[in-house]
Image (cartoon, each protein chain N blue to C red):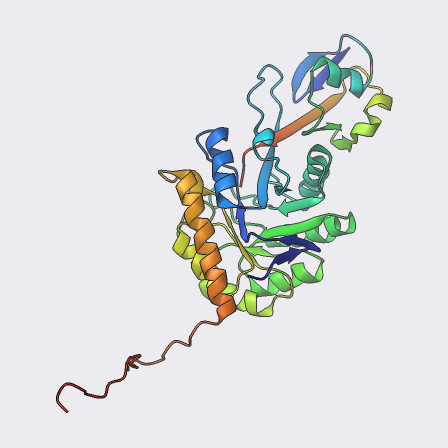
Length: 66
Length: 258
């Protein structure tokens, strides 16, 4: 299914959950957070959060800053 | 030296470091370690799906260092709360440098939104360290809202201009019941030492170290300045004379011609 990840169209090829997306994108085990439609989804819920066509996600990671 | 205590956690170092503007993550890490800091800020950005660049996080995660995620880039209290929740999830800490500066030119913090966000984030269990204007009234309000510290600016971010808000910082330090961390504008170790001599609990420094000719040496210079300033404060500075009349520190009795 097609998703919007950080405003970029992304095809989720295997699975339907956030956990599947994290695996496909090879996200690290720490240091990232994901929001679905601007609501943070805790890592513990990734496996149970089923995505649907057109869902918009934001994925963030650490950056340098003061 | 007295330990710094924030939200029940003890810190030996009173120097906080920002991680922006360093030439490389390697230099940043060396500067962090050389500074002896135990509190390091980290920002957030959207991941780039095709770009597997060096992960900065591994350069700042150390057993003695408290990560202090910031909310840089948000413009409202609502956005700050969202950013805080993302930070807590990503970095596994409820400590937060709250910064809301909608104005991209001067990056001055929005006091109304900062107070509003502090109230909400404290309710949600965050340890909130708000970056704020050097406004004594606002700082009291933030303290009443449950902020763990207040972090008034010395001068606009990144200007290296030193304690431009000196008189207001003095009032804030005098009135505050939470640690006062002087943040933004500190450009030289002497500025940090001055803030500490005034009784600031800590200084947050970024640009002055990151853009120095030798950031690692500058980190050490700041470490020493913060220690010197704090020691002087705890030792009790001698009062300044309010006139120009000198007061000798050696005996003035004549002994050559007697």
